[in-house]
Image (cartoon, rainbow, N blue to C red; front, side, top):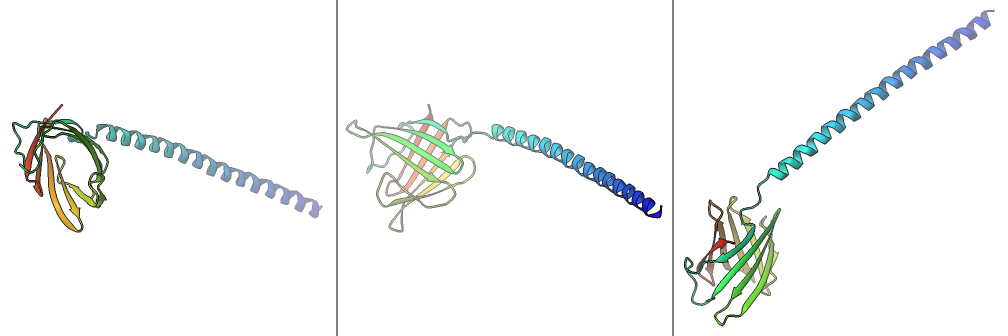
Length: 184
């Protein structure tokens, strides 16, 4: 009888242990599910907040189409032209300047440069051997340096007016001029 009691006792203990183990497993499972739900809600809230913040982030004041106002500009006699326009695109640290220049004989010349604004030297695409280094100097000023063979060829600063209607490009180096652009 003692053996039978012992066997029943062991069986009850084993059943109790399984039950307790099951309760612990159930408790852990419930906590894991709760954690997953809370994490999902937090992740969803953070994602929504980040997308709202990105949507609220203002577009660069440089973005858009600009036309040269030659009456307000001071051109270098070494590089005369009859008209110019710029199209500027900004994507993160990348700026693309697409220009169209009307030379003295009335011919249109179109070109584009894309460069990084983090101070990284970027090979130019319009003139062989030229590289560009650009940096933002605040939200409304972009400074660019063109180098060739280790020498600075020119510096151009682009500045958008406080009202966002005027872009002024100041060049120094091989070409000394100030070109005032108005937004299209």
